[in-house]
Length: 79
Image (tube, rainbow, N blue to C red):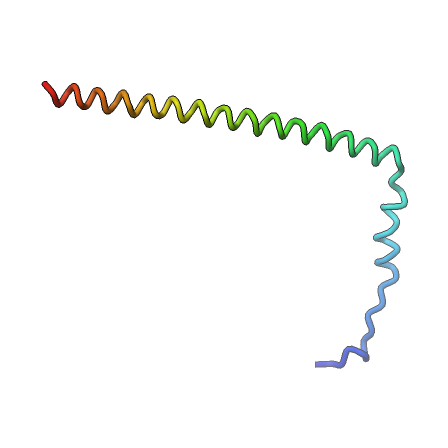
């Protein structure tokens, strides 16, 4: 392999490219992004709460279904 000192890595253009988008973003854009992030976070929290409610309802419905099937099986076998 070639020694590293023969090919020094210099990329000042990369540094300029990385800094330029941050300089272009103003305070109003940052505040707008924060507001959008807060809205999205709130919507996500609501969806997670709905999901937990649905999971609880599913659990109740499936347990009632299994109970009904077991009761019907027991009544059928009793004949």
